[in-house]
Image 1: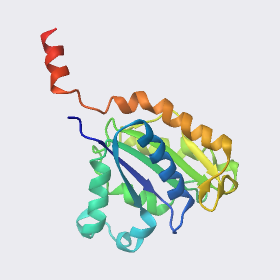
Image 2 (image 1 turned 45 degrees about the vertical axis):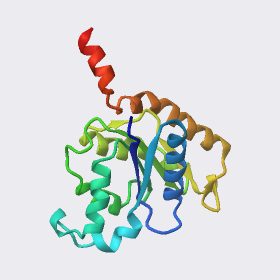
Image 3 (image 1 turned 60 degrees about the vertical axis):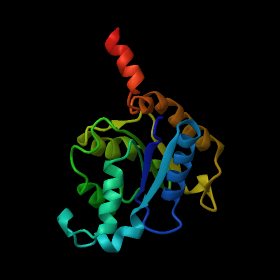
Length: 193
């Protein structure tokens, strides 16, 4: 019996409700429509008071430690962040500063961001992709960038964006399939060949 993949999304949104969290949930749902997985959303805005002032991971409370461990143990990671001054939020970076540098090696990571206008769309490739390259993660081919006008009541409404999100997930599926360990029968068959 194959276990469900662990799908964890991290939203760098600072408030609730959040467009970044809404985009993360939309992307997780698209992945869950294609792959058997357990979903978990980490909302950094809810953790902000517990992250503030911590310099070392040992200083973090158990609630934050659980969320860090969830990301480190995930099979698939979705990250979304609002764009502030051309980059991800400071809280987003602070959270990932606590992730062990080897924890995301070869993990598929779907990159997404939200912003006030299209002029920040390249932030995915200029800010997020280098951050996750440091972790040696497999950043998925297409990022998803949404602007304020793409949402209505914190739900995606723009058809072009909805199609791009679906395409990003479809293009990610072959890399996501690589995360599933081979079953023992398949391993034995390969060994016998």
